[in-house]
Image (cartoon, rainbow, N blue to C red; front, side, top):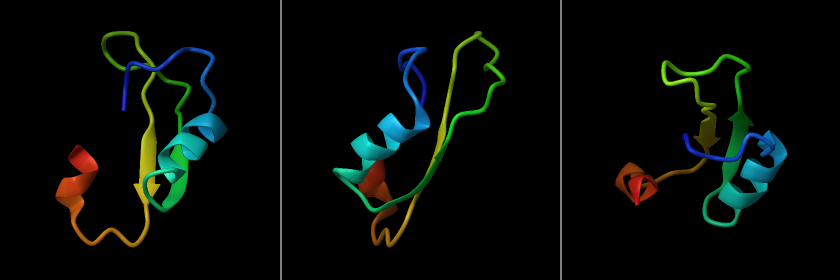
Length: 55
């Protein structure tokens, strides 16, 4: 995911994602993407239909 506030923490994203899916982990690397923006990785558990995650 990209385009979130600079001040957003992994804990805040985990709390947000957990409202909709069983979230296993959220990681925000210190390195920026090629456009100079932050990005994160989220791992979800027990996903039966991965297409629903894209909504």
